[in-house]
Image (cartoon, rainbow, N blue to C red; front, top):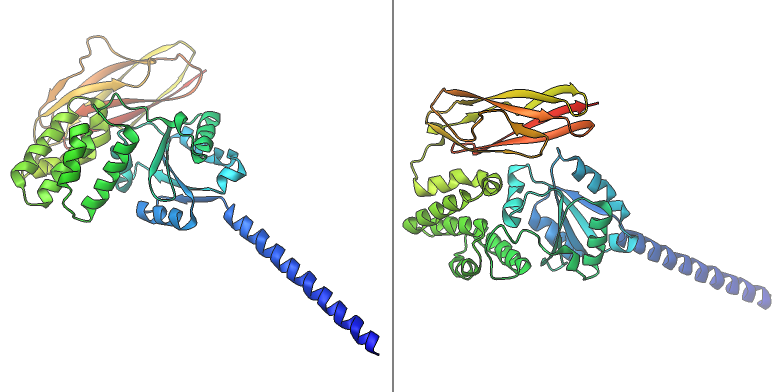
Length: 363
């Protein structure tokens, strides 16, 4: 009888040990699965995703994209190409920069290249900017940056604005200044140090906003004028910072009324139809000033060699209220397949940039 009970007790302990080992293994497996989970968020508040990444101790990869960008969609789908070890240490946040609340990413980085990936440490410090959508190159660079080697991700827009400091520290400082300004803190001293080292347009704009918040209206107007003058030095600045122009004008003149300005109206899309390879086609776009003030067309930019201006076409026009102007262009079918190109019109109107998408099919 004693041997019988001894056997039962031993079997009970063996079963208990097996169950405990199984439970431990399940916990370890669940923990590994949970930590290696592929996390992708879309269009969340930046502070929220940054705090979440910090809580989970993960690198934050913010991917700037647009829904009308095929390369962006392919790039986002290729995120699974990252090695599982890298995926376990990173949290992705895909941001649609065409949304007004997300334009600040483009204005902060001073670039329009899509897609672009910004990598932040779990503590919230910007470590790398990875532009472009080449799958192997971008994925390799993200992998290396997560491992601490950011040489492949050197910020590439140094020519856009003069700077005497490294651009990653500059962008970190600028982001910190933006956050403090949103909390209505006086950021005069931080901006003073920043602006002595860089003429970043977004820093100039934030300076104007800060001066206005602090009630220093003359200084605010001076900085707003400086911001608008800076934008005139490059069409790319107008493209990136066009949404901030009206606020700058209001700082200069609190009685400013956008409804009284000129407004450029042009079709947003034009389908040219089907063409044979190397066939040329002339088409026209009608520009109309539907606003209440005269309008200056400052520049017209074509985004590929397949587009050209028609004969005798000028690139600057003055349109009075209600006046229209037809402009001729030439399309050359240089590449077979579906063609998507853009023509950009820059003006002094309330809408400083109008973009026309040109579509064609080449056989």
